[in-house]
Length: 106
Image (cartoon, rainbow, N blue to C red; front, side, top):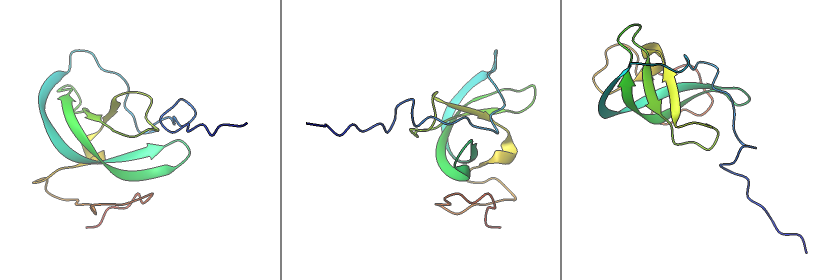
């Protein structure tokens, strides 16, 4: 008898994050803050998703965002501030749920 195997959340589902800025050393921990992150998935393309900013690199402003998504093979990604939106940030605002849409609502 064949058993159904659920591969969600395993290496088969992992995708590279194309706009990840790479690992950092010496970044500062910060109090966790809810953010909306624009993630460019290798196969699924760009998507706005919820995350949690937890570290910042003062040298270039990159921010580490924890992502709770089965496609992410690590805890999260280093993203630029341009790829993030948070409550109180001036300029760009994005929809609460934007699936595969790289253009945030203004």
